[in-house]
Image 1 (cartoon, one colour):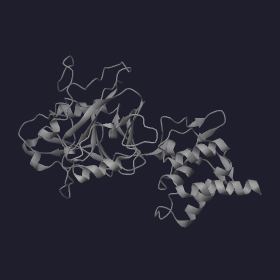
Image 2 (cartoon, one colour; image 1 turned 90 degrees about the horizontal axis):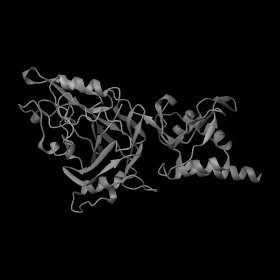
Image 3 (cartoon, one colour; image 1 turned 30 degrees about the horizontal axis):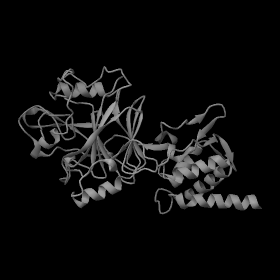
Image 4 (cartoon, helix red, strand yellow; image 1 turned 90 degrees about the vertical axis):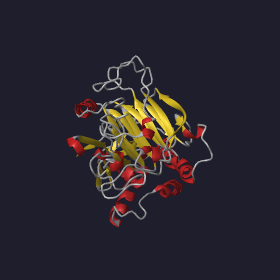
Length: 377
């Protein structure tokens, strides 16, 4: 009897972290089934695993927590649960996810215990993979007021093509060492092999003002955040920021929270949105659209993608980069720094095809970062 009461007490502690209340994605029957399966899984966890899971849920993924392994193809009642990690992820993170193929494993996660055929079920060791199709790319059209006659871009940036320029945005361009060549056929640091050196440089901006020094990234996982339970990485709150800024900027500062995680992985560079608000990102290997402009020239609009909380987006794809660089170069755009990514916290930028957007340039966003990548393949 005592063991039963203790179990009920433990399970009730986790009910506060359910995210099913009021969700339209699930029917009442499906919600009940998810809860039932989760209870069956939790009852089989050892005390240390239950403690690690509770720690992850209480910190909302802000603390580094251990893997929690559970057998795959476990029979729970009349059902065989093939993907227990999906069950907990849907209950505690995003109910709309339907398959484990939509999940991306965190670099800190061991994923599977091969000998025992177990899988990690810690819901904060996973995120949902963002697709980069037309649905996620919301700002596509170039403002007509930005068109100029010169055919040179001052950088590889969103809403920038061979026929556009922006004095404010050009101030964010990376200054390359004099020993490295610059030209239309040059993709920055593609032949660099020394991984002991920084693989990225992160600059923080508030609108068109650069704040503090750049952060040089040398580890595979970099946190960019306002506040974390165990601070590690690029802490924006530690920068010497002005207090006489617009109220909108102050609000966004406060809402950055856990911010994002920038990771260098085998297939490319990823960002994981750890905050409670959406991120907006663009980069040279993300989807772009072609548009005919005056004079018969082709204009490339690099799309800005909205990344909701809990989602991961591959902002730089090793396989796509050479193809994109060639495509842009063949149309006359000079890639002074083709391997640059921009990420805005909470506020997006660009112009939609249906209506004018209030922030046409990234330098109109209250808080954003520019990531220069020094990658090798």
